Image 1: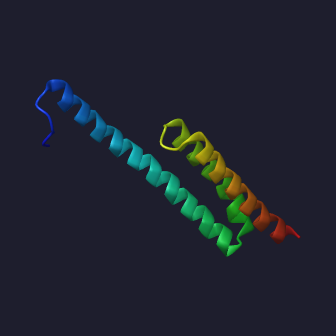
Image 2: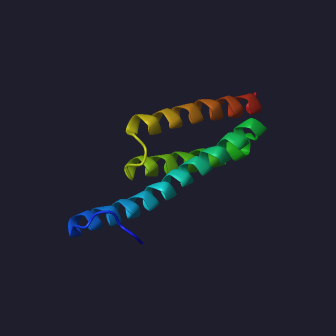
Image 3: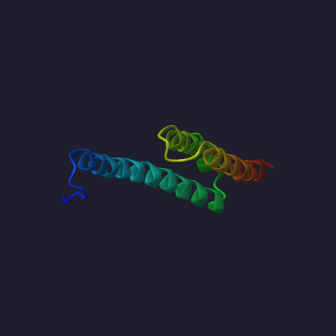
Length: 95
């Protein structure tokens, strides 16, 4: 691994940024993947699967917010939209 900078502190900061980047990328990928699964269930109109996936999706989004990968308002917006779409599917199926 080549690091920029000759000072010890600069090398450490670069190393830390690479570690943070890896961690953040993993969390962001997990959030996006879960949302993609949820959207697929919503578009299929599978009310049971949507009902099952909704709490799990909210948890994953909240983890993204707690880890500092997502902004609080962004996480809230994602959850709000997912809840609205999921509710439409579930109420449409039951009616």
